Length: 102
Image 1: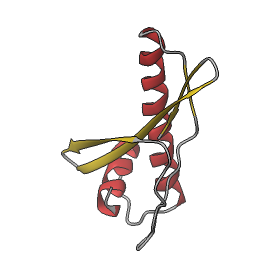
Image 2: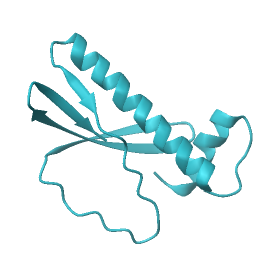
Image 3: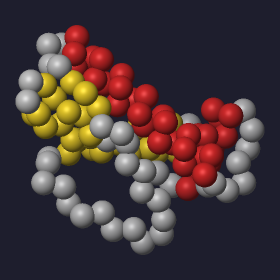
C-alpha cells in the first residue's frame, strides 16, 4: 500500500492523524495483517482445512525489491475509502494442515 494509505489507515485505528510512517504505524499495519491472516485461518479451519498463520512480513521503503516466492500467491486488492491495500496470500500444505503466509 502507499505510505499515505498506511498512515491514514493506522490514523483511523488510533483516532488521530499520523504525520509519518513511524514505528507505531508499521507495528499497527503488521498487527492488522496478523488479524486478517488469523481470521482467514479460522475460516479455513471451519471449512475443514486445518491452518496456522505465520507472522506477517511488512516490507517498507522506496525501491524495495521482493524476490519471487516459490509458492504461488493470491493477490487480493482491498479498495478502501482510505486507499488501496494489496494483500498477497500464499498457502502451502505443511504436515497435517495448511500454513497461511501473508
